[in-house]
Image 1 (tube, rainbow, N blue to C red):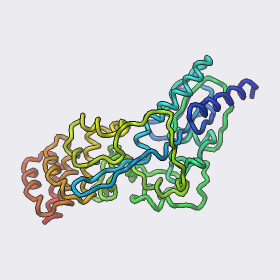
Image 2 (image 1 turned 90 degrees about the vertical axis):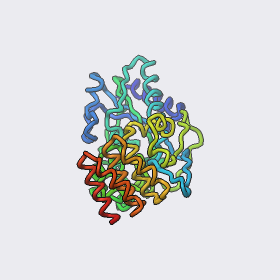
Image 3 (image 1 turned 180 degrees about the horizontal axis):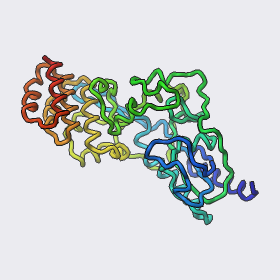
Image 4 (image 1 turned 60 degrees about the horizontal axis):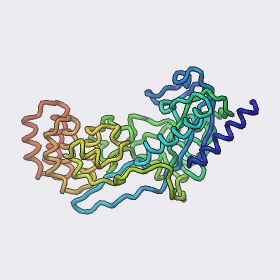
Length: 350
């Protein structure tokens, strides 16, 4: 490795620290062996003359201020660091990109690469058995950002499967759906987080979602790596002024403007229809009967999956008291999947 490469790498690491980023690593532009279907695995398809993938991590623990539910006002929950996600990723990417471009190098966003794999391969993080990465002192409260560059930096190419979990299975045991039964391999069709992004949620599984309305945190809550973390007191970017535990009942019938005003921008990537379905399931799981009149109105909303979830929720909360609303909707409903849910709800309360 040439001397200037070592010097540039050291300078970049120091720049990242001054910018408030906690970890920075570099790995080669060799294609990655794992990722989700939507992810690009070859950095050279992003930047043809790519030499290095730079990945940074920002510690995002300690800012959340959840509020407890109270009678008549049940509240939902997000997975960890949801409100900081977009801002942290954009900030880290911009800090690295600006530095490299100012020195005459090309730099392109690596957001479509499997950044968790890049972080592990670069040596700044390790995989957990829940397929989430963690680092000593920061746990899994790491928001990753990355840049593909033609700069020749000092690269680490550690095996992407590297982990330090040993015999610990806390995350596996904490998952209520068995999505982590194959260690280090997430069963996407069983993952609550993926369900809440928009995948169908079977009737028998809706109770397992709890009051989560976007992403979940069961495995991270249980991980020993997240025990005793020191809260971050200052962030190098602005956090969204949104609740970490929004009230559910106003969201059941709220319009898109209300969702945008009430929820973090990251959640809106799932779409309002998906979020409303999630809200309805969370409201049912809260056990608060105050939601019943709003759920009855939700039976007439345009989105079929919303109506199906509302039927399930009414049966869970109302028993015989909601029979009239379900029966009236069944007489009008044309969508068979929704009819199936209404009929199942009526059988449950019979």
